[in-house]
Image 1 (cartoon, rainbow, N blue to C red):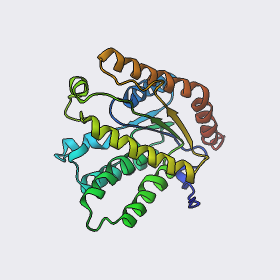
Image 2: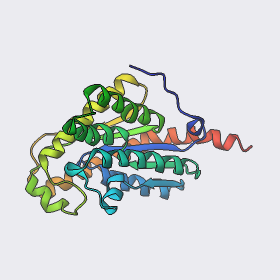
Image 3: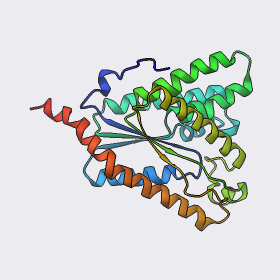
Image 4: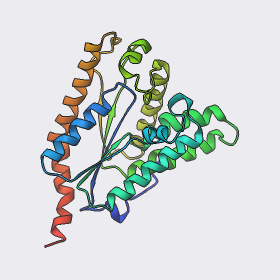
Length: 248
């Protein structure tokens, strides 16, 4: 249901344009994000790239991914909001987030909460998801990239992703993607005007080689750049007009 939530004054015309990048490991999310970040900086925009909360949590000694606790996943959600609030008031033109609230709430927080049970009844989980997955996304987003997963074996993930930060468990990855897509569906149902760009892999054959994986990531990068040029750039300029007009 649409709650009628509106953005605060900080996000009114002339505020920073906020782009969230979402998706599971090896979907091309981070690769596309890095290219968009560089592209916007080359074009002369003041761009702030927020650090992924799970990486910060890991440095602080918290367990992440399939070993995370409800407390850790909530810390990641809180940290994303804290980083966004700080970046907004720093006066950047564009803010980029590596994961967004739907990703963190539906894909990871809910997975742990359901496992723990206890005080986390279905009703409480649903209310929490509405607040942190839906409402926070609407409040802190102008555009969302949703990178869908594709089949990949755990042993290949172990070969190319073994950095101690990203999960190499294919089943965990697929489960998180299913949850994220359910969250995206609920978000769009409640707020159909929110701009969401879906990157669907062109075919669903299982990835078995590094070159195949690189090809998928290349496709994700081209998709993001195409969206940037055709749709996002005009929206950024339109939103920032209020900032410049106010100074005349």
